[in-house]
Image 1: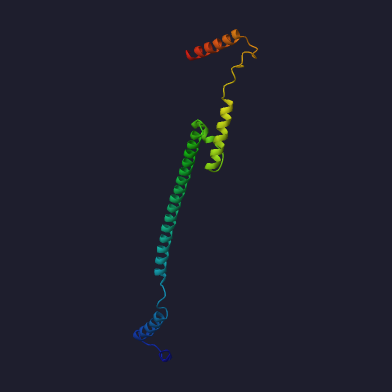
Image 2: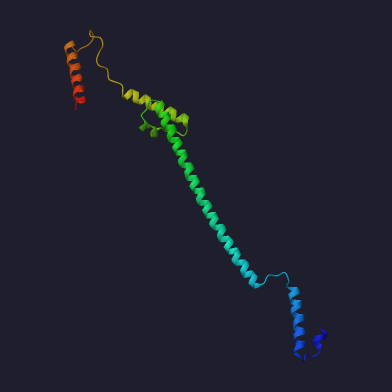
Length: 159
């Protein structure tokens, strides 16, 4: 402060006073970041954030693809298991996708029920009364019916 009371008459004295003041200011603000450094740090930070966001996006795509692959794999395993169960129950492969239920046990029960239904609906009708004494058709009629059935079958095989 003593320097300020005396009048500054030369450039050297002014430079010395300003130099001291700058030195004190530098000491006061040492450790602080300059505006140029701050700008550079912010740009580097923005680039790093962009890289991380891109990596997160790519990772999410990979996770989604993995989840899709797992779901497809589970569907294929389910379809394969249903097909195996349908074949074991004596059903045609085309009926495997019709099996209902959430697990193997329910699919097996459904396949058995479906096979029973098909067995009943595909059983041959009775050919007639096997006891000729109680049959209302004459032996001649039975023979004609058998011959007509045989002829129909023969014709359908030769077409």
